[in-house]
Length: 356
Picture (spheres, rainbow, N blue to C red):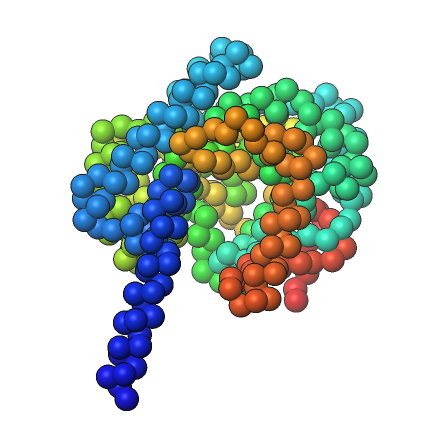
């Protein structure tokens, strides 16, 4: 019986590989990043021959070309700031009266939110979809501002509507290991964008963004590190490294030719737009606290920019959050994928953590 079972498992694995092989191959042409879940992307021999670093080089070359095509949208001093650092910081984005109106809208708005737990930290997200924006005209006006709109597209290198949330970070509110987002890491192998418009002051000891200036640029030392990392990433002890978001030490950063990370502690009404293909982290929080922001995220195909992209239509792009949550719920109900974003009814961005 054991021999039959062994042959059954071999046959099952063979059929699975024959079925998935073309899909794994196609994923090479996308932003798919998991070394563990794609045996081609995670293959040690292929990565020793340069597969991972070639994908990275091509992705950065394509992103730089797209950015050159959008450079006319951005003031030259902002382009220089981004090229130097990998991020852009803008203070006093809104006039004070307009910012006060926006804050009042966000505080008053209550709806279904989603929450996830990572270590001792809870992240809460409220979708900024067309239905929500009907109730928040000041937020809607902010999302249409050039300082927000154009910077996100330039840094992300795609003229596509990003995903919008009101995001709340509740640090040290549950028992658990340290927040894994406090480890220095790159989100993926290619340029990508995240943006934070601060609705609360962000102190140096209150979970600020920490970024390694210039790490959005690929140095020879970085390429050597990426090659070595990729050869063992599929079996990496760190789960997130294995999934394509590699963790890095400060000693390794120095070996790549980068300087030390900087802490971006900023007051309310500030905007940070960063290429999170560079090394960054969430700074440590000294004590339990809350940080709220309007948050945007954009990650698209690193190699190709489609001539026709439905996500350029604002009303469709803004609905992706709800659609993504619904798809995740359905896959979880079918037992195909774990849903880590749990629904919470009648939440505000500024509510404290409610146990249970």
